[in-house]
Image 1 (cartoon, protein in one colour):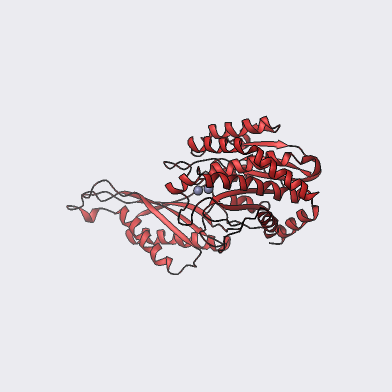
Image 2 (cartoon, rainbow, N blue to C red):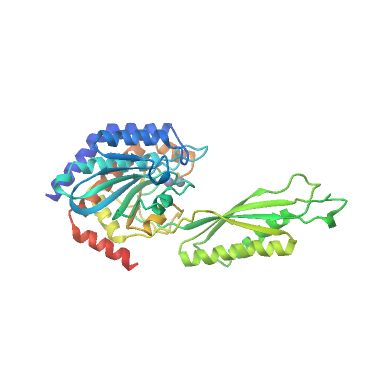
Length: 390
Ligand SMILES: [Zn+2]
Ligand SMILES: [Zn+2]
């Protein structure tokens, strides 16, 4: 029975393939940045409506967020497939969210085909602004995930890897206030705000040696004065601070602030610290869920690439969701190893033949994994238990 249903899902995704490729390419050729993804939302929701999903756009107060519901049978778990669809500024779909979003939509529609034989509810959640807007964090805060038991998505990558950890991240802006003066005639009258910024960088570079491997601190100078003959009265820098474990992350954030405070003290400047509104939390893996996904990968004869789950760690708003409900965020390979995301090469891969193949594989994987959960309350139990235990 299970195998027959799985065969039906695989065939259904293959039947939907021309439509899915069309959607995926349309989103790729109309890149839209955070919170402006109107065209992508239109293409995805049109397809969902055509396939009997009940669509609500503008959820959580975000115009380009939506959900699409297919009420299944019985009182089984509710699974959310997450669709990302935002592009990067200047670079288009160099993170391949056209693939991530389309795969989830394909999975939701294909899973509907076996709804009569599986108990559970399918919700497709359209989550805007992964790149710097924290769409998922806003939707969590607005309670949009409170009736959902688990969440799944795939992300294109240069590797196929089921679990990849992610770092917590927060933005910190340091603004130094000094006093302007003629730099040659009255240097003793001035207070140099740019020196506050420069010393902050130097202090952080000294701190770096004392940090654990998992920490990342990187920044840019955003204001540094107007002319060499004016002592800069105002200067600022923007940093991202990241770490893998939340407790350590908080410690590192505090140390970075101390670096700026020390710089202010040394230069006699006044310092304002502005913390970013959103903190991306680290990714909390669910290995029970990952194992089900892994079994389906072997069913399709796809090999997981070797590698450490701590390799190539970035950050994503999916981290926050993974701390709220059991979540899977699997990488599906769409290009050679030397092509990295957020590059023009990856943008090309996101519309290549291999990219489309990855999208179709992703849709199958998500639907098959969900079917296993819908048909096995014990599996859902184990997933919940692991989530609570950790
Ligand atoms: Zn990205
Ligand atoms: Zn991404």
